[in-house]
Amino acid sequence: MLLNVLRFSFKDGTTEEDKAKVLAAMRRTGALEPVAFSTVGQFLGDSAEGFTHAYCAALADLAALDRYLHDPSHIAGDDEILPHLAKLSAFQFSDDMDPALGEQVMGMHLKKVAMYPQWGQALDAISDLGAPSGSSSTG
Image (cartoon, rainbow, N blue to C red; front, top):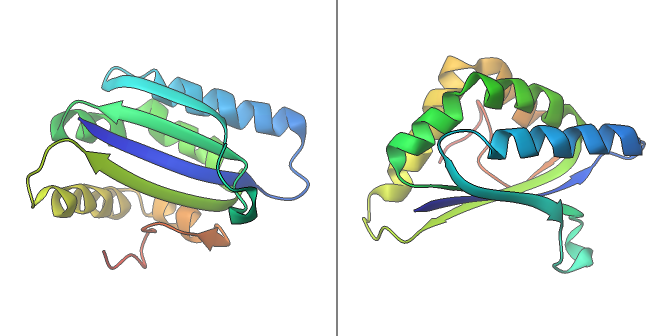
């Protein structure tokens, strides 16, 4: 099982209506076929870190991750989500102890950036990106 966890906050001035639309888009993404389970809601960690919300999606394996990353609904959802984020931090973890798994996941991320450069640019446009980004990502 692979878990993808995002912590994020909204840009100043984002309306409650826009926040609700972003969270709804995340819920749609979390309901895609490859996702075993997902949740999105308030971040309960240290508020000093600057995050207000979190998203988690669980995927059974790399094949499910590949379907998830390239699903048209996921790509369209990112177009709705990313412009509203001021801060974003992502991490993944897995119960699969294959030492090459992290490199494989990063390779899939970089493949998506190469296929969808506008997606990588949207990630790079987030002012406080605490995760591998788009075109400037080095691993």
